[in-house]
Image (cartoon, rainbow, N blue to C red; front, side):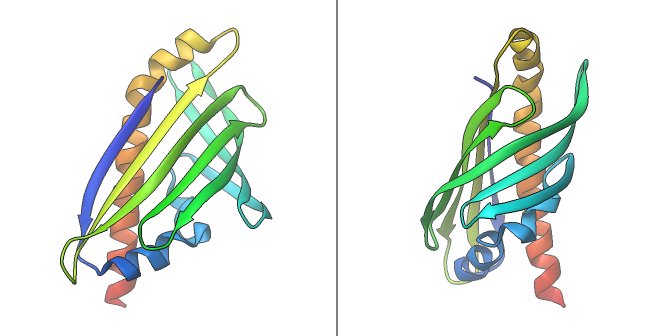
Length: 149
């Protein structure tokens, strides 16, 4: 199963990092390939992405369901394909590193199913870790940017 983990340190207290990430609208547009999202209920969102993984190039819709909100500690989610056969899970984990620094860890596991699954999954093995790293770095930059205002 293609997966990736990335950890970065943000020079902000954990409550400020949590405050940013707990609002999905703050970071959803930072996800690679993001086209838009719609909130279905308190914990469920439909997201649209433009995917360009090897030969697989098209718009994909996924439903993201947030399953666990541990304040100042962790946010977990599951995802399922709406337009294509994808499933997976992920999380953001927060660890205070002193009073003014937070370690943010992002994790994503994403698996394709169906007739083309083996080819798509072979591309996802390198794409998913890159996506997790890019998103984690973008979140860190956006938080720093907002703090400087």
